Image (cartoon, rainbow, N blue to C red):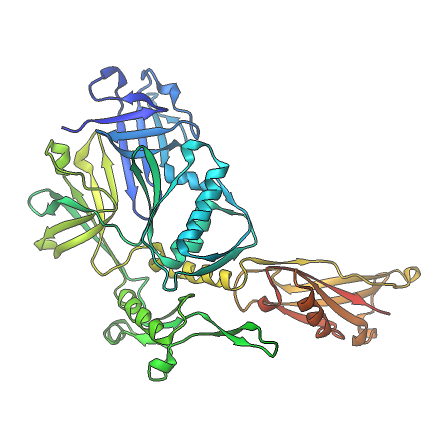
Length: 485
């Protein structure tokens, strides 16, 4: 029979055969889409209760020689009986400890993850480092182009630039005494156990979420580029669509779903798709998912490995054969989450996703996906530093001053945002803007592109009010108005 043990900083903290090392709870929650967690409780007389140092100690749970959890405690609490309880997060959370500096990346998808991990490893101690593991998520062109002008947490960067745009799952894997970070399009492990009604299935809870359903989808591909008069490729404000290969329609729909719940529209962006035919195929596949919504099933089970049977565990990130005719369950499903109490296995549960339904963040949370892609398209979180308007060579004795008024946002995060900027001129406290000719107002932009700034300045002279849009900002820019009296 398998033996479950817990180690704190490589020292034994729990062993079922040592009464003095007794604990009261060891519940591991695995989640294919998020960071796993451990709830650990020990009585006040545990001899090593002070050895767990939140955020510092490394806590490892093993079943025989297999690591089923590695991480750190986030807190330390106690109850009326002075039983101590720690909530712990898995080692995947180490990716929240480091920052990715501003970057501009062009290359393969694997290369970007490798860059993120390299920066992470250089900033942390050895126990928090990862080796780059298996990468099975693919990009259609095997080429991506992303940049970020701000500092970002490594985990956030991976989610925003990889998972939210290309889907997939992160997985920590142990091999040869080393810790690998895999980025997988799908999991390839299948449990040897079968969950069956009347055998090891104790309870069933089926949830169907219809809030994510849509019946019509407008797909958009890559930004269309054109060649200017100087022979340079420039981006337009248009994207690849499917009208040329879809009888003039820019959308796909599910007729049966429309008849059932009516027209519910949504739109998604495939940043790297440049051919209308490929875009149509992706949209048709995506439409099948959107029309069904999200279904999950929570099953309370008896894990046969807990009974002493020589059979592998059922774990999150595995496919499991499930049969229950009374509930209409018959198929092999992905175990997206698993709660397992190693001291009281009778309450173990698994959550599975129904076949044909995608439960990843990239599809279930499409709004975040689109937002992230648009951030990349527009040069990330382009920030306008509003500088008070300056007046050159104004007669100081008259105490002229200017005031720059902004109506709208000062930080552009989404495509299509606009702000009005107005320059007011005061003599002492009197507003004299209306008495001045428009020709007195000369606007300037300062960014990293001097030639583009000069062109922008030339087209914004002789205006008291200008409109700044996202297209006017290249990563970072400042604006001011020169008033000549």
